[in-house]
Length: 101
Image 1 (tube, rainbow, N blue to C red):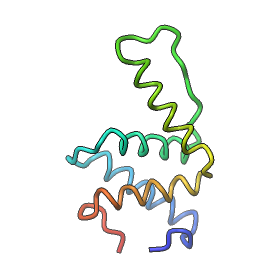
Image 2: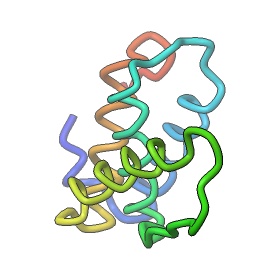
Image 3: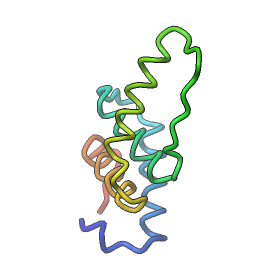
């Protein structure tokens, strides 16, 4: 499936569907996959500004560092590219739950 050919409206609809499927699945994803879902979503929604807490509690600093690294890795992608990559990642990991055709 060539997602590049989708209209913005159709891509947005599919992106939201992918987000719902990823959010609702019972499947457990590896941590690196979760970070990519997080980063692609944030970039697609234009919410990738990092907020650093002054005094992190417990493991927050480590989690923030991993999230920041994931966001830095996807910063070069446009919102549209991030949506496409999110959909592709969802399709890869939720093949049976998220058929595209």
